[in-house]
Length: 246
Image (tube, rainbow, N blue to C red; front, side, top):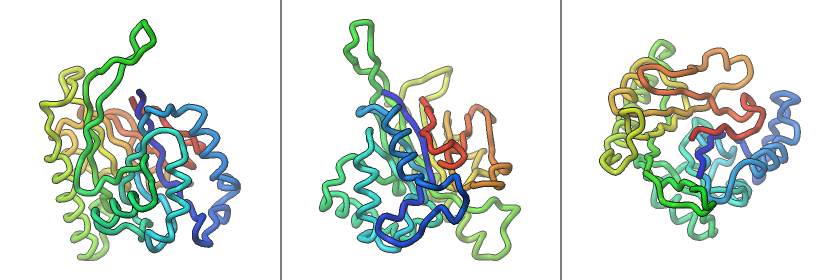
């Protein structure tokens, strides 16, 4: 089993919001994502999608987008992005998935998920391995970019949501690798210093995030800092190819 990540799909099958206006690289991006995804992702793999999934305003308008995602290989965990206006309560989103038989999608909504790893031994048959956790929140603009009191309010609220998700993880269940449990954090906005300190304090080992496009890629956080490895997973940055995380 592998863990992949790819964010900022910006699908618009149910609304008129073509992405090719943002550059030639977005031409036929739905086909690029599908082809690249299904070449590498296995049916038992997980793909983490860090927000900006659909341009729909209401979840009902996003039905075709989620049918597209559900039809891709693997199981998907989706967190919220700043353009996910369709995002509603956890109960309504669960009901939406059940009503539309979208059985390969889960939403990260002030909670966390524990994933049991499988390891293929020499026989070629998978055996149960350890467990890892996936948690996270949307996040917000870094503190040094706040322009209004509302920015600070949203930022503080997102920190609370991130900590709630981190606190929901029972680290006693998890595989310990190099002295740290396997915890993956999903963000939409790139982390700033306070967020990075929180992730390190809670023993997170991997952090994936999106939001940055085109020239803004230069603001990305890369590499390992205080024991946490950071990866930008915006689909245009990755050439519309999922990134292998674990």
